[in-house]
Amino acid sequence: MSRNKTIKRIGILTGGGDCPGLNAVIRAVTKTAIIRYGLDVFGVEDGFLGLIENRIKPLKFSDVSNIIDQGGTILGSSNKADPARFCVDHTSDGKPIFEDVTDRVVENIKRAQLDVLVCIGGDGTMSAASRVTEHGVPIIGVPKTIDNDLLHTDVTFGFNTAVTIATEAMDRIRTTASSHSRVMLVEMMGRNAGWITLYAGAASGADIILIPEIEFDLDAVCRRCIDRSQHGKAYTLVAVSEGAKPKGGHVVVDRVVQESPDPIRLGGVSEVLSHDIAKRTHLECRATILGHVQRGGTPTTFDRTLATLFGYHAVGLMMKGQMNHMVVWKKGNLGAVPIHQVADKQKLIQLDNALLAACRATGASFGDAG
Image (cartoon, rainbow, N blue to C red; front, side, top):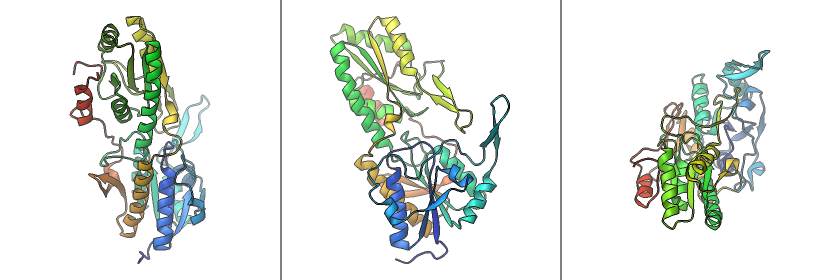
Protein backbone atom coordinates (compact mmCIF):
# COMPACT_ATOMS: atom_id res chain seq x y z
CA MET A 1 0.00 0.00 0.00
CA SER A 2 1.43 3.34 -1.02
CA ARG A 3 1.71 6.03 1.63
CA ASN A 4 1.38 9.77 1.79
CA LYS A 5 5.02 10.68 2.31
CA THR A 6 4.19 14.01 3.92
CA ILE A 7 2.75 12.13 6.91
CA LYS A 8 5.22 10.23 9.05
CA ARG A 9 4.19 10.73 12.67
CA ILE A 10 0.66 10.88 14.05
CA GLY A 11 -0.74 11.46 17.51
CA ILE A 12 -3.88 10.06 19.18
CA LEU A 13 -5.79 11.49 22.12
CA THR A 14 -9.02 10.59 23.90
CA GLY A 15 -10.92 13.56 25.31
CA GLY A 16 -13.95 14.02 27.54
CA GLY A 17 -15.54 11.27 29.59
CA ASP A 18 -14.48 7.66 29.21
CA CYS A 19 -16.59 5.47 26.96
CA PRO A 20 -16.75 1.79 25.91
CA GLY A 21 -14.87 1.35 22.63
CA LEU A 22 -12.13 3.95 23.10
CA ASN A 23 -9.42 1.31 23.23
CA ALA A 24 -10.83 -0.34 20.12
CA VAL A 25 -10.36 2.93 18.22
CA ILE A 26 -6.84 3.43 19.58
CA ARG A 27 -6.03 -0.10 18.47
CA ALA A 28 -7.51 0.35 14.99
CA VAL A 29 -5.77 3.68 14.36
CA THR A 30 -2.40 2.43 15.63
CA LYS A 31 -2.41 -0.91 13.83
CA THR A 32 -3.72 0.52 10.56
CA ALA A 33 -1.12 3.30 10.65
CA ILE A 34 1.73 0.87 11.36
CA ILE A 35 0.72 -2.09 9.17
CA ARG A 36 -0.65 -0.26 6.12
CA TYR A 37 1.42 2.89 6.05
CA GLY A 38 4.50 2.38 8.20
CA LEU A 39 3.78 5.44 10.33
CA ASP A 40 5.12 6.27 13.77
CA VAL A 41 2.28 6.57 16.26
CA PHE A 42 2.25 8.53 19.52
CA GLY A 43 -0.30 8.57 22.31
CA VAL A 44 -1.21 11.79 24.12
CA GLU A 45 -1.97 11.20 27.79
CA ASP A 46 -5.22 12.54 29.31
CA GLY A 47 -6.64 14.22 26.22
CA PHE A 48 -5.80 17.85 25.51
CA LEU A 49 -4.29 18.07 28.99
CA GLY A 50 -1.44 15.91 27.72
CA LEU A 51 -0.82 18.36 24.88
CA ILE A 52 -0.89 21.28 27.29
CA GLU A 53 1.57 19.57 29.62
CA ASN A 54 3.62 17.90 26.83
CA ARG A 55 2.92 14.31 27.86
CA ILE A 56 3.29 12.41 24.62
CA LYS A 57 4.61 8.86 24.34
CA PRO A 58 5.28 6.36 21.53
CA LEU A 59 2.57 3.78 20.83
CA LYS A 60 3.91 0.45 19.60
CA PHE A 61 2.06 -2.45 18.03
CA SER A 62 2.40 -4.41 21.28
CA ASP A 63 0.90 -1.54 23.29
CA VAL A 64 -2.44 -1.89 21.54
CA SER A 65 -2.64 -5.66 21.28
CA ASN A 66 -5.41 -7.36 23.27
CA ILE A 67 -7.19 -4.13 24.22
CA ILE A 68 -10.19 -4.31 21.88
CA ASP A 69 -12.43 -5.68 24.64
CA GLN A 70 -11.20 -3.37 27.40
CA GLY A 71 -13.30 -0.50 28.69
CA GLY A 72 -11.84 2.91 29.46
CA THR A 73 -8.80 4.21 27.61
CA ILE A 74 -5.16 3.23 27.93
CA LEU A 75 -4.24 6.85 27.20
CA GLY A 76 -6.34 8.39 29.95
CA SER A 77 -8.74 11.28 29.44
CA SER A 78 -9.78 14.65 30.82
CA ASN A 79 -12.96 16.72 30.54
CA LYS A 80 -11.41 19.84 32.05
CA ALA A 81 -8.83 20.72 29.40
CA ASP A 82 -10.11 22.94 26.63
CA PRO A 83 -6.94 24.71 25.39
CA ALA A 84 -8.93 27.85 24.53
CA ARG A 85 -10.23 28.11 28.10
CA PHE A 86 -7.91 26.30 30.48
CA CYS A 87 -7.83 26.79 34.24
CA VAL A 88 -4.29 27.89 35.10
CA ASP A 89 -4.88 29.00 38.70
CA HIS A 90 -7.49 30.13 41.22
CA THR A 91 -8.21 33.45 42.86
CA SER A 92 -7.92 33.90 46.60
CA ASP A 93 -11.63 33.09 46.96
CA GLY A 94 -11.32 29.88 44.91
CA LYS A 95 -12.62 31.05 41.54
CA PRO A 96 -10.83 29.58 38.51
CA ILE A 97 -8.59 31.75 36.34
CA PHE A 98 -8.83 30.80 32.67
CA GLU A 99 -6.32 31.41 29.89
CA ASP A 100 -6.04 30.49 26.22
CA VAL A 101 -3.09 28.07 26.06
CA THR A 102 -3.59 26.96 22.46
CA ASP A 103 -0.16 28.30 21.51
CA ARG A 104 1.37 25.94 24.08
CA VAL A 105 -0.52 23.03 22.51
CA VAL A 106 0.66 23.96 19.01
CA GLU A 107 4.28 24.26 20.21
CA ASN A 108 4.18 20.83 21.87
CA ILE A 109 2.72 19.27 18.73
CA LYS A 110 5.55 20.81 16.70
CA ARG A 111 8.12 19.68 19.24
CA ALA A 112 6.85 16.10 18.94
CA GLN A 113 6.90 16.49 15.13
CA LEU A 114 3.33 15.23 14.81
CA ASP A 115 1.97 15.66 11.30
CA VAL A 116 -1.66 14.84 12.17
CA LEU A 117 -3.64 14.55 15.38
CA VAL A 118 -6.49 12.04 15.81
CA CYS A 119 -8.96 13.39 18.37
CA ILE A 120 -11.42 10.84 19.76
CA GLY A 121 -14.24 12.46 21.67
CA GLY A 122 -17.68 13.98 21.91
CA ASP A 123 -19.03 17.46 21.28
CA GLY A 124 -16.67 19.11 23.77
CA THR A 125 -13.61 17.46 22.26
CA MET A 126 -14.72 18.26 18.71
CA SER A 127 -15.37 21.88 19.66
CA ALA A 128 -11.89 22.17 21.17
CA ALA A 129 -10.37 20.36 18.17
CA SER A 130 -12.09 22.73 15.75
CA ARG A 131 -10.50 25.72 17.48
CA VAL A 132 -7.07 24.05 17.38
CA THR A 133 -7.38 23.50 13.61
CA GLU A 134 -7.64 27.29 13.24
CA HIS A 135 -3.99 27.40 14.38
CA GLY A 136 -2.84 25.21 11.52
CA VAL A 137 -2.92 21.79 13.22
CA PRO A 138 -4.33 19.05 10.92
CA ILE A 139 -6.89 16.98 12.86
CA ILE A 140 -9.09 13.96 12.19
CA GLY A 141 -12.02 13.55 14.57
CA VAL A 142 -13.59 10.29 15.72
CA PRO A 143 -17.06 10.61 17.32
CA LYS A 144 -17.29 9.16 20.81
CA THR A 145 -20.09 9.55 23.30
CA ILE A 146 -22.57 7.33 25.08
CA ASP A 147 -25.04 10.21 24.65
CA ASN A 148 -25.25 9.78 20.85
CA ASP A 149 -25.70 13.54 20.51
CA LEU A 150 -23.14 14.44 17.85
CA LEU A 151 -24.51 15.92 14.65
CA HIS A 152 -24.09 14.36 11.20
CA THR A 153 -23.51 10.80 12.40
CA ASP A 154 -26.35 8.33 12.89
CA VAL A 155 -24.58 6.74 15.82
CA THR A 156 -21.48 7.14 17.97
CA PHE A 157 -19.56 4.27 19.47
CA GLY A 158 -20.28 3.77 23.17
CA PHE A 159 -24.00 4.41 22.75
CA ASN A 160 -24.92 0.79 22.09
CA THR A 161 -23.07 -0.40 25.19
CA ALA A 162 -24.68 2.26 27.39
CA VAL A 163 -28.16 1.37 26.11
CA THR A 164 -27.48 -2.34 26.65
CA ILE A 165 -26.39 -1.71 30.25
CA ALA A 166 -29.37 0.57 30.93
CA THR A 167 -31.80 -1.94 29.40
CA GLU A 168 -30.42 -4.76 31.52
CA ALA A 169 -30.81 -2.57 34.61
CA MET A 170 -34.43 -1.84 33.69
CA ASP A 171 -35.10 -5.56 33.19
CA ARG A 172 -33.66 -6.37 36.60
CA ILE A 173 -35.49 -3.57 38.37
CA ARG A 174 -38.79 -4.66 36.82
CA THR A 175 -38.69 -7.85 38.89
CA THR A 176 -38.31 -5.87 42.11
CA ALA A 177 -41.04 -3.44 41.03
CA SER A 178 -43.39 -6.35 40.39
CA SER A 179 -42.54 -8.15 43.62
CA HIS A 180 -43.19 -5.09 45.80
CA SER A 181 -45.88 -3.30 43.74
CA ARG A 182 -43.76 -0.17 43.45
CA VAL A 183 -43.19 2.71 41.12
CA MET A 184 -39.55 2.24 40.14
CA LEU A 185 -37.61 5.07 38.49
CA VAL A 186 -34.30 4.43 36.73
CA GLU A 187 -32.20 7.52 35.94
CA MET A 188 -29.89 7.45 32.94
CA MET A 189 -27.13 9.67 31.59
CA GLY A 190 -27.32 11.82 28.47
CA ARG A 191 -27.20 15.40 29.74
CA ASN A 192 -29.87 17.31 27.80
CA ALA A 193 -30.26 14.63 25.11
CA GLY A 194 -32.56 11.69 25.74
CA TRP A 195 -31.21 9.06 23.34
CA ILE A 196 -30.13 6.51 25.98
CA THR A 197 -33.38 6.86 27.89
CA LEU A 198 -35.55 6.60 24.77
CA TYR A 199 -33.81 3.48 23.47
CA ALA A 200 -33.48 1.74 26.83
CA GLY A 201 -37.05 2.67 27.69
CA ALA A 202 -38.28 1.24 24.41
CA ALA A 203 -36.20 -1.94 24.72
CA SER A 204 -37.37 -2.62 28.29
CA GLY A 205 -41.00 -1.75 27.69
CA ALA A 206 -40.98 1.11 30.19
CA ASP A 207 -44.40 2.43 31.14
CA ILE A 208 -43.21 6.03 31.35
CA ILE A 209 -40.24 7.56 29.51
CA LEU A 210 -39.10 11.04 30.50
CA ILE A 211 -36.61 12.77 28.21
CA PRO A 212 -35.25 16.34 28.06
CA GLU A 213 -36.80 17.01 24.67
CA ILE A 214 -40.34 16.68 26.10
CA GLU A 215 -41.05 18.58 29.30
CA PHE A 216 -43.22 16.43 31.56
CA ASP A 217 -46.36 17.26 33.50
CA LEU A 218 -46.10 15.83 37.01
CA ASP A 219 -49.89 15.45 37.17
CA ALA A 220 -49.83 13.39 33.97
CA VAL A 221 -47.05 11.18 35.36
CA CYS A 222 -48.95 10.62 38.60
CA ARG A 223 -52.18 9.87 36.74
CA ARG A 224 -50.46 7.16 34.72
CA CYS A 225 -49.07 5.57 37.91
CA ILE A 226 -52.50 5.67 39.60
CA ASP A 227 -54.30 4.35 36.50
CA ARG A 228 -51.97 1.38 36.32
CA SER A 229 -52.40 0.70 40.02
CA GLN A 230 -56.21 0.82 39.76
CA HIS A 231 -56.41 -1.40 36.68
CA GLY A 232 -54.53 -4.45 37.82
CA LYS A 233 -50.99 -3.28 37.07
CA ALA A 234 -49.16 -3.68 40.35
CA TYR A 235 -46.15 -1.63 39.37
CA THR A 236 -44.91 1.14 37.07
CA LEU A 237 -41.48 1.23 35.46
CA VAL A 238 -40.17 4.71 34.66
CA ALA A 239 -37.09 5.51 32.53
CA VAL A 240 -35.80 8.99 33.38
CA SER A 241 -33.12 11.01 31.64
CA GLU A 242 -30.91 13.04 33.95
CA GLY A 243 -31.86 16.12 31.93
CA ALA A 244 -35.63 15.63 32.16
CA LYS A 245 -37.52 18.58 33.61
CA PRO A 246 -41.12 19.57 34.36
CA LYS A 247 -43.04 22.06 32.26
CA GLY A 248 -41.79 25.52 33.11
CA GLY A 249 -39.28 24.03 35.56
CA HIS A 250 -35.57 23.44 35.72
CA VAL A 251 -33.16 20.52 35.49
CA VAL A 252 -31.79 19.04 38.70
CA VAL A 253 -28.12 19.94 39.12
CA ASP A 254 -25.94 17.55 41.08
CA ARG A 255 -22.86 19.81 41.24
CA VAL A 256 -20.93 22.51 39.44
CA VAL A 257 -17.33 21.91 38.36
CA GLN A 258 -16.06 25.44 37.82
CA GLU A 259 -12.79 24.37 36.16
CA SER A 260 -14.59 22.47 33.41
CA PRO A 261 -15.60 23.94 30.03
CA ASP A 262 -18.99 22.26 30.67
CA PRO A 263 -19.36 22.97 34.41
CA ILE A 264 -22.95 21.81 35.06
CA ARG A 265 -23.27 18.17 36.17
CA LEU A 266 -26.83 16.90 36.15
CA GLY A 267 -28.21 14.22 38.43
CA GLY A 268 -30.86 13.43 40.99
CA VAL A 269 -34.07 14.13 39.08
CA SER A 270 -35.30 10.57 39.73
CA GLU A 271 -34.98 11.05 43.48
CA VAL A 272 -36.94 14.30 43.33
CA LEU A 273 -39.61 12.65 41.19
CA SER A 274 -39.77 9.61 43.44
CA HIS A 275 -40.54 11.85 46.42
CA ASP A 276 -43.10 13.91 44.49
CA ILE A 277 -44.92 10.90 43.02
CA ALA A 278 -45.10 9.16 46.39
CA LYS A 279 -46.45 12.29 48.05
CA ARG A 280 -49.18 12.79 45.45
CA THR A 281 -50.21 9.19 44.80
CA HIS A 282 -49.41 7.46 48.11
CA LEU A 283 -47.76 4.73 46.06
CA GLU A 284 -44.44 3.27 47.16
CA CYS A 285 -41.64 4.66 44.99
CA ARG A 286 -37.94 3.98 44.62
CA ALA A 287 -35.26 5.64 42.49
CA THR A 288 -32.09 4.13 41.06
CA ILE A 289 -29.40 6.32 39.47
CA LEU A 290 -27.26 4.24 37.09
CA GLY A 291 -24.53 6.88 36.84
CA HIS A 292 -21.10 5.93 35.56
CA VAL A 293 -21.89 2.21 35.32
CA GLN A 294 -23.27 3.09 31.86
CA ARG A 295 -19.82 4.25 30.71
CA GLY A 296 -17.70 1.43 32.05
CA GLY A 297 -16.91 -2.18 31.31
CA THR A 298 -16.63 -4.27 28.18
CA PRO A 299 -17.98 -2.71 24.96
CA THR A 300 -20.61 -4.60 23.00
CA THR A 301 -19.80 -6.34 19.74
CA PHE A 302 -21.48 -3.49 17.85
CA ASP A 303 -19.35 -0.82 19.54
CA ARG A 304 -16.13 -2.80 19.01
CA THR A 305 -16.80 -3.17 15.30
CA LEU A 306 -17.98 0.44 14.86
CA ALA A 307 -14.92 1.69 16.74
CA THR A 308 -12.68 -0.45 14.51
CA LEU A 309 -14.32 0.94 11.36
CA PHE A 310 -13.99 4.50 12.65
CA GLY A 311 -10.30 4.07 13.52
CA TYR A 312 -9.51 2.46 10.16
CA HIS A 313 -11.40 5.19 8.26
CA ALA A 314 -9.72 7.97 10.27
CA VAL A 315 -6.29 6.85 9.05
CA GLY A 316 -7.61 6.54 5.49
CA LEU A 317 -8.90 10.11 5.58
CA MET A 318 -5.56 11.55 6.69
CA MET A 319 -3.63 9.59 4.09
CA LYS A 320 -5.94 10.98 1.40
CA GLY A 321 -5.29 14.48 2.71
CA GLN A 322 -8.85 15.00 3.92
CA MET A 323 -7.87 16.89 7.07
CA ASN A 324 -10.00 18.62 9.69
CA HIS A 325 -12.87 16.20 9.17
CA MET A 326 -14.71 13.92 11.57
CA VAL A 327 -15.53 10.32 10.69
CA VAL A 328 -19.29 9.62 10.57
CA TRP A 329 -21.62 6.66 10.10
CA LYS A 330 -24.50 7.64 7.83
CA LYS A 331 -27.16 5.31 6.40
CA GLY A 332 -24.96 2.27 6.88
CA ASN A 333 -21.83 3.75 5.35
CA LEU A 334 -18.65 5.43 6.53
CA GLY A 335 -18.24 9.09 5.64
CA ALA A 336 -16.80 12.35 6.92
CA VAL A 337 -17.89 15.92 7.64
CA PRO A 338 -15.83 19.04 8.44
CA ILE A 339 -15.21 19.22 12.20
CA HIS A 340 -16.44 22.81 12.35
CA GLN A 341 -19.90 21.58 11.33
CA VAL A 342 -20.03 19.50 14.51
CA ALA A 343 -18.40 21.95 16.92
CA ASP A 344 -20.62 23.62 19.53
CA LYS A 345 -23.72 21.81 18.27
CA GLN A 346 -25.85 18.95 19.56
CA LYS A 347 -28.17 16.34 18.06
CA LEU A 348 -31.43 16.09 20.00
CA ILE A 349 -34.46 13.84 19.58
CA GLN A 350 -37.00 15.33 17.21
CA LEU A 351 -40.69 15.00 18.03
CA ASP A 352 -41.33 13.07 14.79
CA ASN A 353 -38.76 10.40 15.75
CA ALA A 354 -40.05 6.97 14.69
CA LEU A 355 -39.04 5.19 17.91
CA LEU A 356 -40.75 7.86 19.99
CA ALA A 357 -43.91 7.33 17.95
CA ALA A 358 -43.63 3.57 18.31
CA CYS A 359 -43.34 3.88 22.09
CA ARG A 360 -46.47 6.03 22.22
CA ALA A 361 -48.32 3.56 19.98
CA THR A 362 -47.44 0.67 22.29
CA GLY A 363 -48.66 2.46 25.40
CA ALA A 364 -45.71 4.34 26.84
CA SER A 365 -46.29 7.79 28.30
CA PHE A 366 -43.83 10.65 27.91
CA GLY A 367 -45.43 12.57 30.75
CA ASP A 368 -47.29 14.86 28.38
CA ALA A 369 -50.63 14.91 26.60
CA GLY A 370 -49.15 13.42 23.40
